[in-house]
Image (spheres, rainbow, N blue to C red):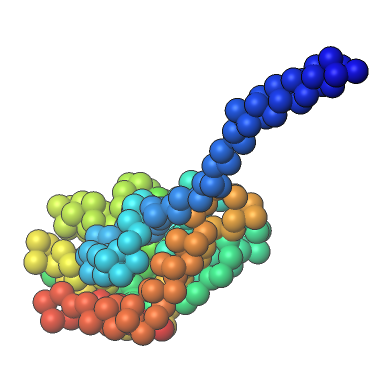
Length: 278
């Protein structure tokens, strides 16, 4: 009996030693998801070419720690980039296209940002004699001349959309050797128009920022048909879960805040205010 008890005691001691030798596996603390600090902004060439973004974005980046990557495109291409989920937020200027973007489920949280206006520019000697005319009459006269060229951006931008809208109102179908559709941004289109001493429709901001390098002058301006409003829209995270929605909202909130509005309203070129915050 003593022998049996001794064996049992030995077994118990052995199990105890084995148990004591084992250590519980360490449980690692759950890894926190690192916040994406890069925001991709798809926007029009006018906001970049005018120099406005160079004033707005550094302030936002310093305040928030975000870095903004800018894709400078025409409005149509900027919205297409948003549809594909290849950006986080869009800043564009074509209200009908913006509303469709949201209605189709690609964008959320659209906000009004600012406005400026379009102008028709051309050579100072104004061969078509359009200075001060109503927009429709001015375009009709350019088309009837068929000698002085009209240079169209032709890039599905907000400016191009506005131009086509105005041609439709005039009843003129723009075509022929006098009408050049170049598929370029606003800056390049202005340079080409200047070289050819033709006419074009431009946003005032880009024209004003390049005015000193051009011989073109403003010939038609200051009418309701030429108003140019801008809106900012976050890409829908339900449609594209990988977008940086938090970053997009942060940028929207900043641009539409009083601080953002003050920067927009305070931005001037040669003493001229280029944009007017909502």
